[in-house]
Image (cartoon, rainbow, N blue to C red; front, side, top):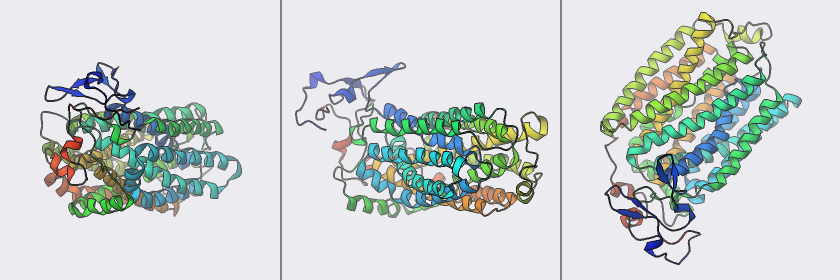
Length: 499
């Protein structure tokens, strides 16, 4: 809570602004500096808040990704997981579209805390399924997780895109993606260790699910330690652009103003739609279908390691100071286009040699799945292909977040853009999980996925080439808020005490 008492300027901590003069932070424990490496930070600084939300995602969606990457949610029969994922992404799509409004009203802390609950319930449903085959509980847990995930990811996107200064957004996205995917990497080590001798096609053990649940609960609790966006102060003393007096009416109106004020943003929607559809083919129809239990856990581990590598490369390249931001945007688009045809072209060469879904499922107990001891063309080639799929996923997601962050520095608009992104993304995922649940042929799943990502890039091209500028002016950002320049600019005048 804010105290009405004004602290004397002599008591306030100081740091240097970009202009070289002293910038005074508000008094209170949130703004007391401490060392993070060689840099002084404070609790309510963008980097500390980003690292905290990254740890929440490390524990919750990171562990969910580790579980999903096993194929079938760790089950040999992927039917329950397909149905749960369809329910998950269906509710996610609806809630996600409006979650920016909810996050703007409730604040990122409450939004994240509620969002973390669904992950442990989802994992518990698979633990239950191991013993009772309770299909309905798994589907319900998936639907509930869709509601929770829509809120969690919108709050996360708001922090990642609106807290940093313009020249640091790529690095912040990179930091987040590294820590988040370390959750999937470490989470993948658990089933790898527990299933190292599982050379057949078996369900993962109860211990795998219990381990995931414990970490997810810790993540949900950790989210309560974040501060809300109105407390954050950047290095130059400036604040995040928000609404001073938000109401449900203003935020619902703002949701539609995000589109009407910049209608060309809809050209990014196909990229949003395509951004999760490839998981279905990669995790279920490649990894889950053609590799035995211990080998798919190893593939899963290296898939997320490759994501970390891509996040480092793309995050820093997108912030490269020697090239103007508009040029970096165009270059990233070209690289994505090349990767789309290089990696997926290699995938086509592999997929056309594989047996059909009918044969795999008709001979489920006798079909000879690939083991890591097979080596050569049978294992090593597909392993590297799967790793490149993970690399591609992180490159795609990192670029999308950076494109959205380059369009606005407003926390309010960032929340709405993230809501659109996650809602539309989830609609695409729901459709593809349902297609997989309907036993769509593997070749069709592959072709639809590749065609969609390639087409989405073509449609998004005009936005990336003509709408991303070298900077967004403060005046432009303030058009989407009831704040003034004086409210958000760096100032030597102390804010009210924070206790």
